[in-house]
Length: 381
Image 1 (cartoon, rainbow, N blue to C red):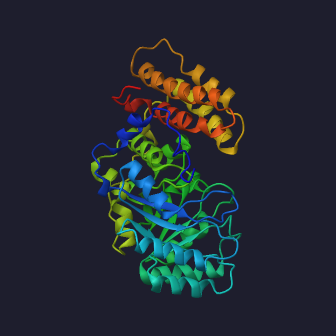
Image 2 (cartoon, helix red, strand yellow):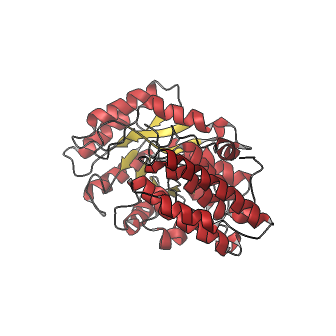
Image 3 (cartoon, one colour):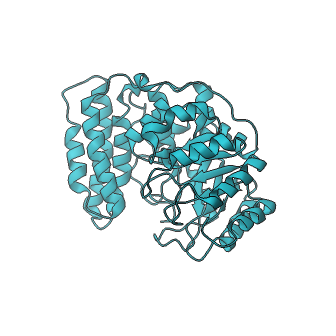
């Protein structure tokens, strides 16, 4: 299963495909995908599999970089460069650099000369913190080239935002991207993002509360669509993006910027486009407890399934939380949530050894329940 969930068909395809509405394949540019086969976490992906994930999502292009390589990144970076050169322009390379490795800055310069468009840095898997003298050199180099530097800013690390803000201020030519919705710093960093057009957040994350905080508090011009393939399928990432964008009332220009327009400008070395201020938390309107209960249990189920533990009880609680006497839009959306959860429960009843079967139903239901005001997609499941 190279792209997580790519072999799971719970009949949710028509619902997920609604994310494509109004956006042709060329409008999409995924800011976060990986390839490799030596990562200690056991995940692997070929460039062909990443292209297959793009095709399945109806998307055209993606940034590509190496997965964790415990023995060093030089060969892996060359493999990424070769794969991108052979992709017909659909895959564009970032070089993965370990700041603690001997010759890190030399590797960065070498890969830029060979065609890399910027760098990927991973504080957790490559065991470094910020500030870091080599990271400073890499960002200075990115500043000279007007190049992107993508930081892992998700689980497993302390916050790093203060250092990234400092780098962004002192090196305005560098385009600094906090991956995974910047969850390591999302609670406080948004006002700084509004003042720093070279600080971005990618959407490669699944927790609906984090996503809604990102879309409501960060300017849409600072948000870049991303999937995290092979750790998540593009079809799911796109569905989450479109639901959250609709929930905070983003217009077509902002949606197109997030979907791919802004990252295309970033990798081209162009000035970022300002597509308006953040909508603000008030744009979400009144929060509905019926939906919050479903989303909470779905988050538990998704985490258990991802970690390989039994998610059935959490899925059942989420399914029970969908019960309502309401016949309005709330009842309609919760009915779709219930159907999605029932699909995962039925699949797990047949294959209890596959906890990952919880994730499609749980993530779809969480996205719907967290954005009830958007309404129910016009699809039959």
